[in-house]
Image (cartoon, rainbow over all chains, first blue to last red; front, side):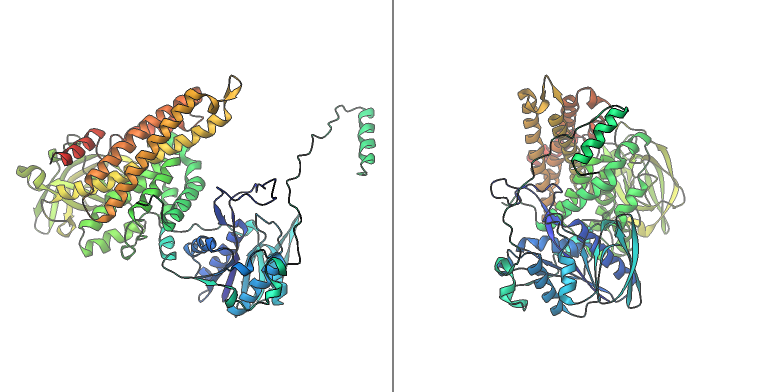
Length: 261
Length: 379
C-alpha cells in the first residue's frame, strides 16, 4: 500500500494573536510545529504501515523552506520519505489554490491508495484543504475519521458526528481526514532524529509541479481576505436571580425579545 | 564560535521536552513521595530509544552527539531529577565504559541490549570506606582458573536492584593501590551477587540506591573489562562522562525551579501587585538567570569537548561544580521566592531543593571537582 500524508507547519499556539494594525498573524517568538490533527493522520499511516508489510508512508507539505524541520520531524517519527512543495509562486494561495497545487503534486507522485490529512489546521481553521484535494483528484473522501480499519481494497471508517458516529466504507484510493480521537501520535526517537537528517527532503518548486500559473498564488485565488480582526470581547450576560413567577416571566420576555423563543 | 544548537539538537530538545511534560512530570511528586522506582517510565524511555542516545547506532544506540544527550537529561531534570539520574547512570556509567573499554564481544553481549534499553545498567565503585578515596577499595577479585571470585560490598549504587548489568570495581592487587584495581561486568544473576540495604534519601527518592553484596561471586574471566589492574583509569574516565550527565541533571533542576518561580511571580500578588514587580525580587531573578546561563555554557562546552576525543576532565569538573552549585543556590532562592508555598509539598520547589543537594555530592563532591580542576592547573 502507498499512503500519502499531507501535513502543515503551523505556529505552536492555540491562541493565535493578530496584529491589530495589519490584521496579520503574529509569528514572532512563536515556535513552529506540525499541525496537531496532521500528526494524528501521520500516526495512523505509520500504524497501518507497521501492520501491513510493504506499505510506504510519504509525507507531503506545502510551505516555506523553513517547513523543512516539520518534514524532518515526520521522518523522525518514522515516515519513509518527505516532499516539500515550496516556491515563491505558490505564496498567497487560498485553500482552493493550495488544494489544486497539492492535488497536482499528488498526481505526479501517483499510485497512492490512501491520502491522510488532518481535519483542520490550528492557524487557518478552515478544514477545507483535505476535502478539496479529494475533489480535485476525483476520489472519495471520508472526513472526521475517529477509527480506521483496512479490509482488502476497502477502508472502513467511523466518521465522528457531534453526538455519535456513522460507519462509512469506501474503496481505495480514498482521502481521509483525521481527528485527535483517532490515535495518540508516537514520539520521534533520538535515532530517528539523527537518521532524518541523513535522508533527503525532496523540494518541489514551481517547475516541478505542472500547475496552471493562473490558478495559483494570490492572483489565482478566488478568496480575498479584506480584513482580519479580533472580535471585541462580549460584555457579561445578564443574570436573573430568584425562583418566583415574576422572574420566570422576565426571563421568558427577554428570550422572546431576542427571538430565542 | 557558534552558540546555536544544531537542527538535530533542537529537535531532540523538542522531543525530550514533550516527553518530560507528558510522561514524566505528572508522576514526579508521587514517586518522590512513595520512593517507587518509575519502571513504567523507564520502559517508555526504552521503547522510544532514549536509553542509548550518545551510543553509536552500530551498538544499538541513537548515534547522537554528547550535547544531544546532555539536552535530554536537562529536559528530564527540569521536571523530575529522579528520572534524569536513572538515564544518566545507565547511559554514562554503564554504557559509557563498555563503549570505551569493552571488547567487541562484550559490546555485542552487554552494550547492545543496554543501549536499546532492553536491559538497565549500573556502576559500582563507592564503598563504605572508599568514597572520594576510591583507592581504599576493599572489594577483592581473585582469579581462579576460568573465573574471578569477588568478595566485598558496594554502597550508594544508583539503579541498584533495578539494573541487569553492573560495572564493578575490585582490587586485583592490593599492594598496588590505584594500580591494583580492575573492572568487571557483573550480571544480576551471577552466583554470589545480591542486593543489600536500600537507602532512603533526602532527594531523588525514587531512584533506587542500594548496597551491592559479593559473597564468593563468580564472574567469568571474559567479563574483565579492560586490562587487569587498569580499572582505576576506567573509573576516572567513566566519571568524567558521568559528571557531564550529573551537571546536566543539576542544570535541569535549576531551570525547572526557575521556570516555576517566574510563573509564580507573575501570578502571586502581595501589597497589591505581582511579585514580579518588586525590584528586590527582580534582582534575585536576574542573578539566578546569570548563574544558570553561565553554568549552561560550561556544561555545553564540556559536552562538546567530550566528543572532540581530547581529555575533558577539567571541562567536566568545571561544568559539574558550577551546575551543582547553581542547582543548590537557585532552588534555595526559588523556595524563598515562593515563601510558605515553597516549603509546602503542594508546590514542587521543596522537592527540587532536596533533589539539588545530591548533585554537589555524587560522581565526585564539589571538593573533588576542585581537586581535579586545580590538579590540571598545577600539573
